[in-house]
Length: 247
Length: 330
Ligand SMILES: [Fe+2]
Ligand SMILES: [Fe+2]
Ligand SMILES: [Fe+2]
Image (cartoon, rainbow over all chains, first blue to last red; front, side):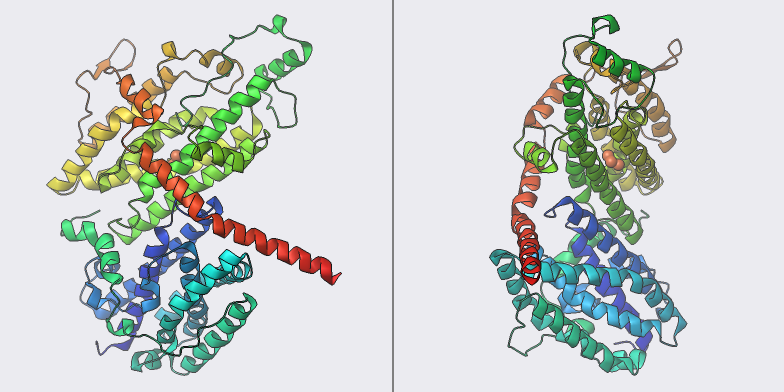
């Protein structure tokens, strides 16, 4: 791990939005209804835009001349710092939506805290992103409630998605030294807000949080699930097979 | 074009004298350049032709998401990825406004979707060709969106108001699509040997299919005359194709690429290029469902629709529950 916590932190934020944006963008043309094709493309676009800002900052802080593209396309899976939640596969549309909701519910309070930090570079990116993410959260919240409290089938699918993904949420707010260094007093607040908000929405959706308290972690330190490798192989193919080419 | 196989009534164009007063009034409005709106009287043939044309156009936008969408996850830079997502999203948006325009003529989006998925409705032949390399994304933007603009600019003046207005919105976005495609080609043509070869290969594969986008030669299409009288169509297929060739050949030269047509040469007298015969047999096979990707495209659309059924039903079920609760609370 680097001794520059801000660099590590920017990588984490950038990798989260990159990996999630990458997966969400794969729905283009395949969503259940045209309006969802458009909405998911919007979310993916926002996330890729945020990636460019975070990884751009990480590259500057690292000071080795690596661009956002170098970081995105030329690191191996062990170098990625995203949380495990965002690398979970798209699955059915319910899993994609649940993954989005569980992420947005953390992403939003996180960006709110970051928008108030003393580090102007971080605050500026957070400020720009928080409006977009507040829309993502409204949208995913609304869909989780409607589908959870929808038909028997939609309820069942949303519950299955929640059962499968809940164990990846603990890593989001479990702060390590890097989070503490950047977020200072904000760490507890994010955890509290996350737990309150998710339990309230899940309840309104007539869904049940799984009883198990076990939570996976490792992403922040570069220890990923098997899902990340194929995602990166697909994403990085052109940069890897044409080294040094301009696109 | 995006609606290559639109057949209008095919009875031959009536003169004003042969028309009943109501039809004559309609035709005079069209002749005077006054837009026809959904609530106005219109001949049944006009309505049917427009429904077919607009829905084919909409289906083309929807199916058209697939060949390019396949490269979103593999786009080589973050900026290219963002641009491609935005482009494919625009195409979905075009599909949406066009479905809305068709709905004003009394057909529902569900009916149109059903016609697409059952194979009854057509979409542009171009989207049944595969995207094999990144250069294909450049070639599609440059050639396919370029041909789309060529066709859609005159449709902005179409006699049917909602279609004409949809085209005005769509055309603005299409020119951005074409620019980004050409920009991809520029980068490749100024790039490594492998990139240049990729660009040439893409032009080789997309050139003929792009020319086919304008539809069969006018000599073979019996239905053009009525559509032109109704101002649903403004130029003939061959005129548009010629304009496209004349515009595109110099662009290929600027890129340093070779247009794959040994018969291509400048004709001073007509002030345009002569070009080789198009393989219409291939075109009709593709339209009939035998193109390289017809089966995959349809399978992808059917899968999206059937996998998504629970989602659409779930939202409906929620809306019903909410309504029932509201009634109970009153
Ligand atoms: Fe198009
Ligand atoms: Fe379009
Ligand atoms: Fe386009």
